[in-house]
Image (cartoon, rainbow, N blue to C red):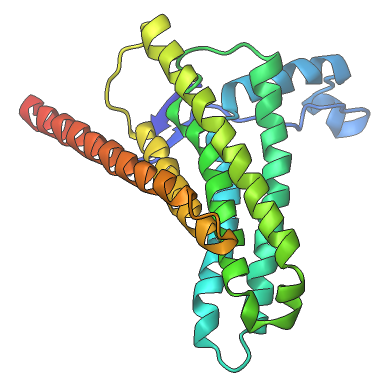
Length: 257
């Protein structure tokens, strides 16, 4: 998928988009716009999925779970009735869980049935793991605060189980994503150069560390603490590498002008 910078911002957007006005037009003005039938539509949608879907779609999950985390943080500032805020945090946590299931199904379809290229397997696919990590973080926050609301206390086994489930799935993604990176750069010889998309890998690593640490607190699985510390160090290293690479690119750009 070719991207183009939007104005003077750092935002990159696709050069093309998927339009559906030409689908199934019959009679009147619609037949003048387009009359694509099901077989043709299927081919067009498959091409759109192949060109457009990636890990950035899961930012919808990240933003939803961020609201849950925010709600659980500010709930303590609403005594003596924090349950309204906790209810909103619980709802956004559950909504984020369902959104992940829906979106990751499309991503799995993309990986399984459509051609993959080294450039297509870009770093934002690390958000596959990062979205799960922040979901585990949001669920763990709710478990820690369960004592402030009787109804939430009843749901502790369910919420803790969901948090652990999503954390396990996120952990499963890590070796797979590492293998994908090795395949891109070592096997397919894709040059390793700075790209703003690499920040899509830095955030998930840091979020995995934070989610693991809070999960250990919420569940009493303190042996996970060492894993959280290790990934926190890895996240700092990844952040440092990205900053240095960004700085070098800026310097090169200034010298070129």
